[in-house]
Length: 415
Ligand SMILES: [Zn+2]
Image (cartoon, rainbow, N blue to C red; front, side, top):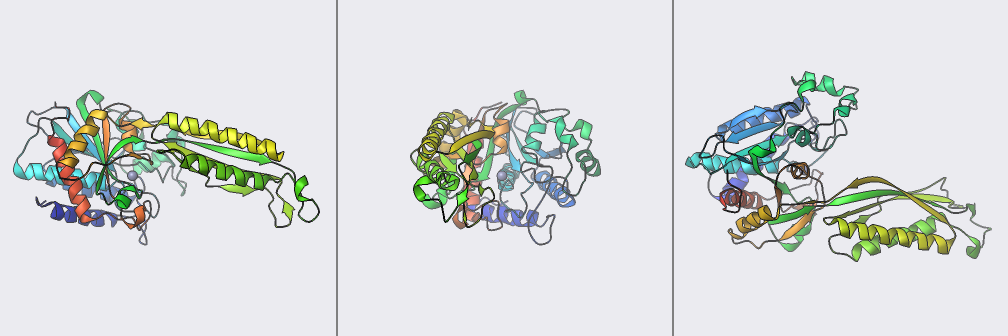
């Protein structure tokens, strides 16, 4: 690939286009774990890695791993990568950008015959979204030997079993997490990813340094009041479950807006036996709270549920809730954040730090090694997991330049 960042960026986007043609559907871009299109994409990635001077292997979960040796063969590696599976009808840069950007960097090193103090490994994780077997982070977990064997009982929407799908793809289900990668051989993990949100776009910035990957909780809340005739029960005598729930939904929004680094969403609201001429007797809804700081989220959670209780008391309805999902926040390595910030600044760009609201393979890697992330501006209003997802060639080129600077920077752990 050429040395000019804009040209590098154009090449990266052209490769994303080429890779998106390996899709499970002729109508839109969907690539699920071990489908024929997924395997063809893996073969293409392996070919590009070899072309960039890397030795290539495939691990037990089908991830493609390219290694570019450092000055001393066998040195610890900076591992960088992302996933090449997609959600159904997704966007072509989610995950893939984090493979193609480092590939461009290694191609540059290889072209110049340059060897760094450490090895560079590009990992194309085979499954992160988990659209086929409703898994999450399957490949990065398997990479570290943290695969959950219970997943092997699952079947896909077409009735194909997990083991069967693996065998069909020439993989051994017994060996999916055999030979886990020893974290001691990894100097650091860094993941380039599109932001999947509108913050960088809104501020006119190409790149961002991720501070933490947000943790989150989800609750299911049920409000019980009293059903009644919409015509005969006077307003003062009502115990309307939906009116109470509506106030609670507003309470979530108000509380989430009151803190920086916190988002709160009610994405589902149901009225039991709802009909136009009956006072709602029961309503239920979900509450999704996320923050890069667990303490911020936990405080919001306490406030929100205290507000629910107060609303319920005042309105004479009952409220109960059940937690259905909880993930703690993952802080990015301060040292690697500094090195990424210096790399971004070395391009003459302002350094914007921001948390990631979405989960990424870096969360799994961070359990074992120092990890960090570089965000790239998302076009089209910041939309992602959608065909309208875009990245500009200029931004992709800047991401490659920043990652290249990072790989050479003194703040990065050496071999
Ligand atoms: Zn992704």
